[in-house]
Image (cartoon, rainbow, N blue to C red; front, side, top):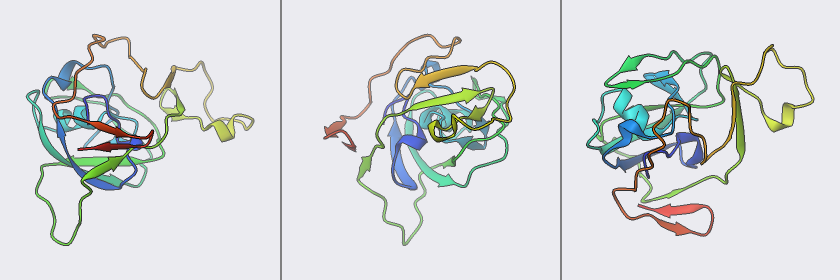
Length: 173
């Protein structure tokens, strides 16, 4: 994975990965504290939670059910954002692997699609014709790989390990 990989883009519900060094100043944002919205950077969440520092390292990621809200905080040099609701969450921990669980050696990525965040509300393309509880202008609309929040330095990190693309859906660790 690289610094901007989001948990929601990875097919499996639990995995171990290595974050490269230098993820503190990358473009992908983090939403939440302790429990993060799946639209967040996996490595950014690992730094924010204190599992790794800006020098990178191995992390354990587990997807969990969605949360009714994600609270933004400043922790370990990274500011996470608040989000009232998102469709999927994840938690990050150290790499102590549990017995009886087989962790994938290849991570498959879901195909790209555009996400919309409205002050924290996800608007599914299926729901465009339906009324939203949100009243106000959209905060941001972005394709999965090109989102750059206004506070980011626009700096893109190279992966610390070789990533081999397999078609349009897979990457080898």
